[in-house]
Length: 158
Length: 191
Image (cartoon, rainbow over all chains, first blue to last red; front, top):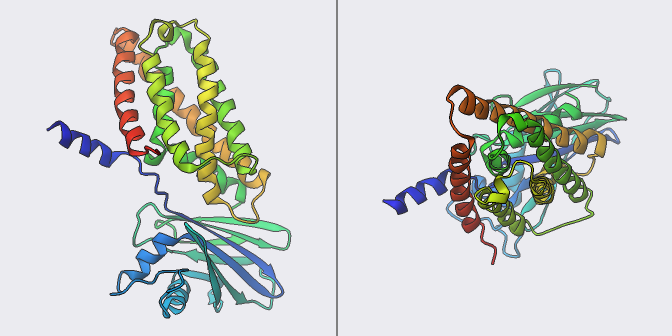
């Protein structure tokens, strides 16, 4: 019995596995240039849900389909819109660190927008407490969206 | 939304979340020995805690100091454990003892390193002091202020309306704090 109580208590205790991502979007050279930083483990678990093999992101024996799976997932979950019109995402690549993974992609955008709708619903179906921060810089103006499963997109006015 | 309000909210929610229970627990245990009429001493102790953690949060965020995350996650519950134990000693229960204030300040330094590890996850490239670090820190203080107010209220109700001795409250809170902190220490054992 005492052991059971200990186990129950330790289950309720904080694990410090924070569910948070951050993206930086810069408007430069008629493009929205994006860097998205995620926990490597979370991304791997997410992508491997429907797979029978492991992706080994960033490792020497990384699975050949890894990049296209990452690109697919990000194009589904991360969007930029100007009014009703979605911008087209172009995936550039990724950089893997021990804990974190950086994804690079851009959206062609010939006209400097006055408003931008950002959506980042990465991992919302995996974690209730996932929050995604998107910081956008257009010219000298910096705006920020704090996205959760309750509010997965936000209109930023510049 | 402005970046300022985003980071203010992130700081606030960091304290008000289950994940940050260790910070809440520390503050509640730190306050446990004080009678309501000594609320000013509580405020002094909490202010020293704030000075301590704001200092290391800033130094950590600005990359002046970097300490291994695993060690910090172990040291934070250790500060709760030691404070809870100290609350059981005669000197720890002496309301006029200034040592509590220094403990709050020094232990605050450790908690601030925990905040800075979390803050690191919230910024990338373009963040700066005024738009991210300052509001994040303010958000933490706002949440902590609210927490202190609620705890003072509960302690006031306990001693005045229920007419119980704060000594009993201290035993209850420090006992619970000790137990929880001990489990957290063992879970985060870095050696």
